[in-house]
Length: 299
Image 1 (cartoon, rainbow, N blue to C red):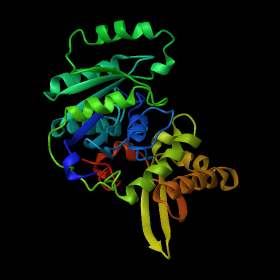
Image 2 (tube, helix red, strand yellow; image 1 turned 180 degrees about the horizontal axis):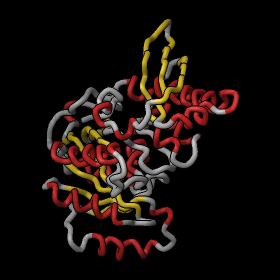
Image 3 (cartoon, one colour; image 1 turned 90 degrees about the horizontal axis):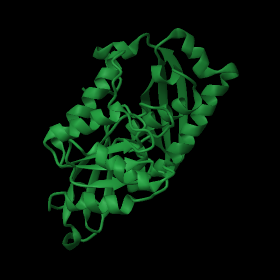
């Protein structure tokens, strides 16, 4: 990317309800697995940055926790604040709505964008699940009756449908300025953070019902030795009875989680990884907001 080719660069926050597809879209546009993705809602608990280097500029995408109406514990309230506090400091907002099953939580995200004072785009995602494409225009008309997005797009982040046009619309609306980051970066997140997230991704994929929502991951050791990353992480569970479930009979569940997380790390970090996992109980940590900073959650 030459200096002459840089026209627009800036920060774009993705907002929407849990499971709207924000993380899938970030990974699709960036071309790397920077934001963890599972079929479970509220997978994203942090602001995660993905950097897109394009011939016309640089797009810094900020994936945010899903905006939701649950207020049952301190962590849920914290995640809503993290998403809301992201809005004022960006150049553009992208509101993602699940076109296949829009809900009141989607409207909550759309209202937050409209009230933010920031320019915003509205993208209806998961159009691959819509049987009749003719239904999309009436859907957009209903959802924009009382808000005024700069543009409306119809996309499938999973199927890579409509993504190129959306990216062009984003770049057009960013400030005319040089890139914010070096052109060889696809994220500014520390490798230590990414490692913890990849472990948490496997907890969500391999544990059932509410158990993975009561877990979090703290990386206790992250070092490189002779070309190999040495990573030790502790999985914290909120209830004593969940510790044995995470470990599994004969340690098989924990071994499976560790093996799959290690493979994902090696692919992302492009080097061998040794991963050691252990499980500990920190009762009701999701209600103890004073601990969130120590556990890696932004204030």
